[in-house]
Amino acid sequence: MGIKLIMFIRVLAPMKRMKNISLFVIIILFIKCDYSERFPDEIQTELTPNHFRITGTKLFIKEIDNFKYIPDANVLKYSDNIFIQCLTTNLDFEKDYNNQKFDFYHNTNYEVVFKQKIKINGYNGVYYKLKENNSYWLYFIFGDKKIENRIVGTYPINDNYENDIFNFVKTVYYKNDYIIPPLEGAKFEFNPLNSKFEFWTFSMNSYIFIQKTIDTTIRPNNLFLKQLPAIRDTILLKTTLNNIVNNIQNNGVIVTNLEIKSDLRIDNHFAYTAIIWGEFENKPIYSKLIITSNEELGLLFGINLYNNIESNLLKVDSLINTVKFKEKCNKTGANTI
Image (cartoon, rainbow, N blue to C red):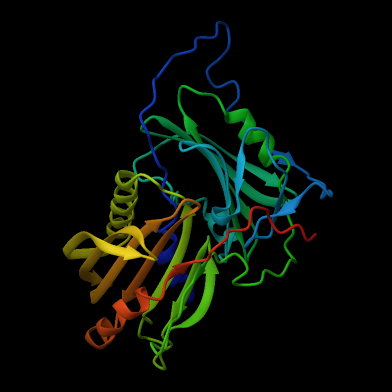
């Protein structure tokens, strides 16, 4: 049940944000077009005093030139469509590695350009290069039986930031025995009131609460708060929400009624709301998704009700009203080695 819940939450992974830019073409003679697609089969990184840990993960990284580190979203950002995100999830990576089946949660309609097996600090991994619309997406996925690590970089197809991303990945260190404090990276405040939602786990910048059930055959109701890079453009805010809804549909939810609204404020910030009625695994489901952002942080609130839906509906709005941004966001990572 726990793995299924995380898999359902994972689809709410952060979405890319696009803006119109002038396109240009650079032609280099006598160089094959795939000259830099290959990543080394194996890398070995030493942990140094210049490394710092990304909050909420077991990954230690170094800063990269011209990229701004955004700790609230585990992102190193050059621009809205050029960034690197580092993620850790409590999943059995070895199982996916053995089956060589991987999901790419940033992307929905993509082409696989290149792929290979790799080893990072002795851990099995894979490297995929995808093309979607006008961007390349580089995925480095590695881990063990308890953790899946993802380093995801993206850039427009007419730019070349592949080597920058490669060089960054070569400095990443995974410390598998590090114990992560569950709520250390939360940049929001939330009160579950008397709803019986209790903190359960965190995954990929998502903080997940569930209503425990005595009957283990009943899927528990859950709610989550997911931190995203700041989204200041309301059009991009709505686009991101639409992409999330599409991913939910692609992962087994049959939507019978969908309503998108823009009449809500979260902590005095503009928000879009998606209300979904439907079926999941042949049973009724109600979902409410709210996306908002301040100048520093985007925030997605979601609640999924599988049982006692009517009685829980009365509590939903009360819970939403308790969501607040913390006044200040930390500007550095956790430097503890």
